[in-house]
Image 1: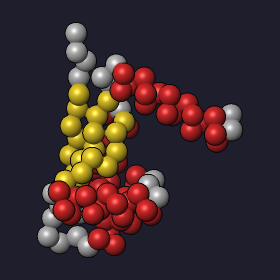
Image 2: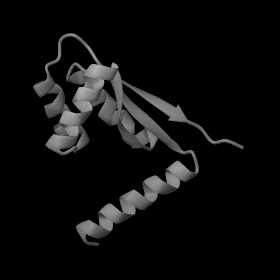
Image 3: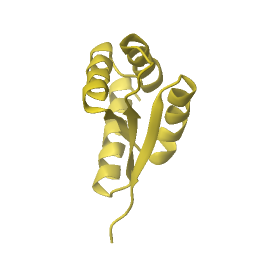
Image 4: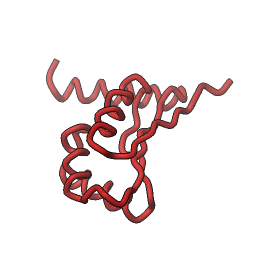
Length: 100
């Protein structure tokens, strides 16, 4: 499977999760001690975001007080949240359950 195929499959899996309400949000809150550069570095290294995307998200966190930085399955978000917390960021997961 090529990297394009893998990326397409990941997007397809995420879309299926979203359509079935089986997804969660990783949210990072603003604080008074982490620098923009550190938050950007964390978003790039932990979440795999591009530098531009990480910079944009860090600005949203700063000015809005929080931002959803990743949407995925709960099991996929847990280790990312733990890593962000270990790096000193304030991160939580909000879950959306199935609607009958």
